[in-house]
Image (cartoon, rainbow, N blue to C red; front, top):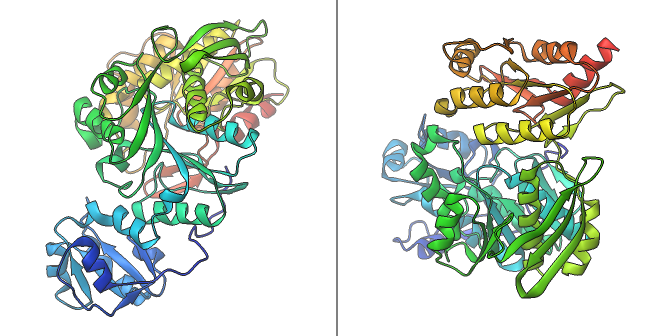
Length: 501
């Protein structure tokens, strides 16, 4: 998606008072007549008339930025007792014991509950959220609906696209975005829901007609601590607080657990379990190897047949969930049979790079052990020659998955090239040591410079091989010590091929 960075706030004017807010959250009124006309928790984004949320953070308390917010035009602050102590009564303040838990709900209230006006779908899981969400949105567009998208690759409102900072925006931003969609007569919204957003209650105040679960594999343990905590964060989406209905992949053990402990009406989904509500009656790879001929069964005798032009078994799962979710929102299954042939994977997901070379070149966002294994298995299935793969691990993220990703790279590639991803504040060489492990296996190379690693992969490629660059996908920058340098795997891969032509 594009990088249009226009502020996503509705054109309509909104105004509330601190007294009304105090009534809403159930605390004693304070400066009841003071009016505010916006809400934000980013002091840099404050507009005159805003209410600023000063929250406790991992590195600093938001109260330290309150005076900057006031200087930019904020009229009042919502904070916790510690924040109030830091502010010492210097600005109009409303004190809540846990303001973070209230941010989304307050923003929803301020913007007059925008989710109530839109039929929304939420999708969570470790891998497949972006692809599944993009496929749902694509089906809606093919069905002539004005739709919205919020996820890792950006935000879309009708045909207009915007950049996104997070997979799931902060609560104030999310509600403003959905209020903008409501204003632009968006009928349907699909959004990725991250575990961070659920744990930090960014989606408080949001509600979905139906939610979907893809899978759960190791990721984000730097934040959640262990797989059980990670799972419990995801499972919060499958409750009446957030959703009316759910469709869950029961091929995944965590999905089966959610389905078995259902708290809301649920339908099951499986690639081949014919006892599930949604399943493939059959699927066969096309002779060209560029997709599948499928027959899908759904509840009530639904049969959807046709050509699915996506690569990889994991995309069979993503497409099945997307089709089930689209059907749940009223798209005619007969129409889906027709739309299916026009579906495309989102940017950076097994995306081909073609500049006249005699080998296959792909980029993919895979950045978990499971995703790396799946991407390499797909590359193997469509390649006659060798699979040459380039992979790094991000800094300041889950360190425990680094050796697992290294193992997945070595297991799935004929030539594994270890490199840097976004090292952020960490030493790239230390990250590589953790990826590679104690012993460097035959068929593995280490090149810390990502540009040079991509060029090395291309140099090694022969006719019939596959070069696949993993980890960054759609991203257009490489973050090193707080600076994001321009870097696009698609451009770098194409450039390396052209230089050897």
